[in-house]
Image (tube, rainbow, N blue to C red; front, side, top):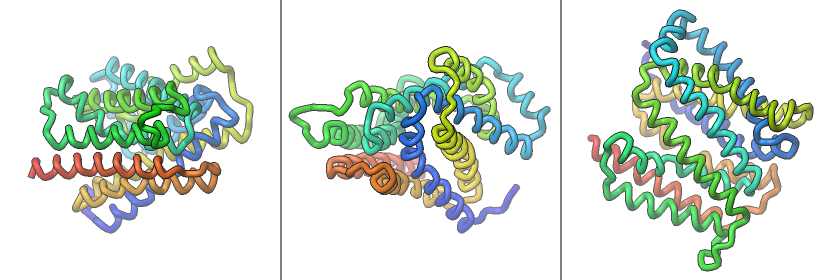
Length: 297
């Protein structure tokens, strides 16, 4: 077992957060040339190859197959959710909305997780959860309406709906993983082994094979840094951490760094409503996590 190393854990966590901060911009750049399904097809293939190489370096093929044989139908279901269902919906939301709206809305999945855990895991909804939900979704409303709370005018009502639906699907994915006995990297690989063929079939059937070079490069970037390397870096950071809360708090930097890139690379003028709404969402998620840690101690 690798010794704890807080400074190394913080460094890996910071690199992961920096990489995650770039993906919203990469989504929009790729979607200028590709459909959501075409983007997902290239990204999923890239991630599958990467995960296969990394996982086989750490685990034997025999052990990976053993985990698969224990629950093949579970991995098929999880693979249909991630990468297929979750990313198709998320990419379509980005296709319809400015990145500065889609990115913060997707960040609310942690709030949805607390809601779904009540009926699906039998957990209780605490006062802190309710406060966080009210605060977070007030932030969502501010972002979605660009601050026009009375007018309730959306850039794309369907885009907002899809962005929020993606949070439900992502939270559901993690809840279904609760009973999963496989290591996180093996589980993710097996999800992509099952899900990527479904993605390729759907992309071929509806949108055809993408040939745009610029779009393909952006999609490969998404596959490496949204679905592959960054997850592994974050997982290793959490394993090395002496104080995991200090590493996990780094994630709150990501949406703000992402807005900077969205502004300077995509040229979106960041509205005050986006910033205010994002602050409310981050406060809601951080307050919820702080309350959970305090209750557990």
